Image 1 (tube, rainbow, N blue to C red):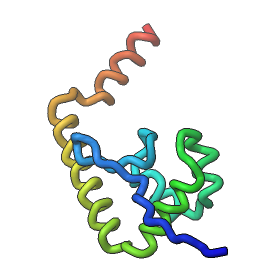
Image 2 (tube, rainbow, N blue to C red):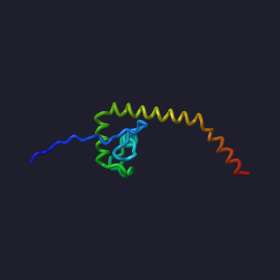
Image 3 (cartoon, rainbow, N blue to C red):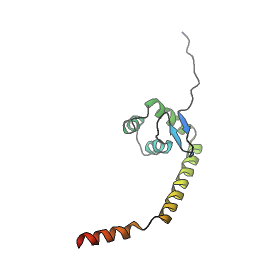
Image 4 (tube, one colour):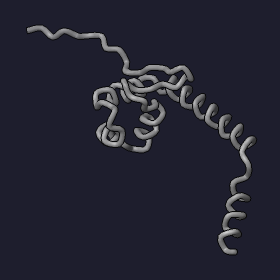
Length: 109
């Protein structure tokens, strides 16, 4: 009996914003990789994110381990984008601590 090797496609897709998602889920690549880096097993990751398949998580982690520099560059870009969004939001939103202080003062009256 012969064993046939098949080429498998990575279970990754990029959405319109440039975010990479895993399998058919909405779970972001950075969530799975950061969980793995924090010591979570693939089984624990799939328990936390039930829309992920265990085989997809193992495949993605294997890809990460073989291409860490590429994935880390992606993660750095995503963090820079997130920081940019945080900055824009903080510029257009009022200081929430002032609002909270006023509400607390009103409750005491």
